[in-house]
Image (tube, rainbow, N blue to C red; front, side, top):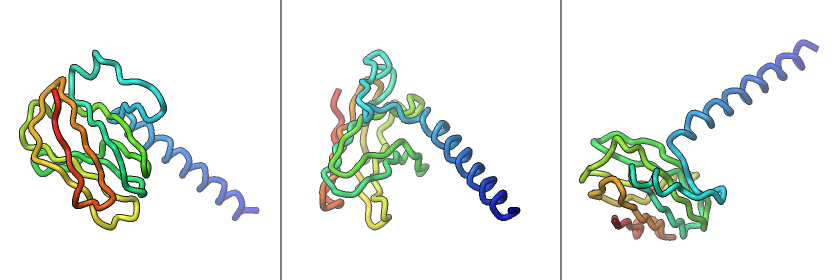
Length: 138
């Protein structure tokens, strides 16, 4: 009886921690993956990262600025997404975007990129990760 109670308590703590982490990460990740559109007024205040994943693996997406890596979102295998990036990062000329497969083997990296508020970064993740690339468009 005591073991069952402990298991329920442990499961509850894990559920709460997962929900809290999801809410905390969501503030950095306003994407269109759920079918919603990014508000053009919000997009004008920052940079939109548009990701097209042509790889079969789901990817963790990160930005690297001044040696600091920051999680910004994720994209499924053979899927695409758009994410509003932190406006405090821009303007910059030293931004890198990276995608790390769920298995953790290899990574796609593009940069340095020069972007300012109102720009879009189009990041294409290729099946061969080392062939991935990104461009900045106004």
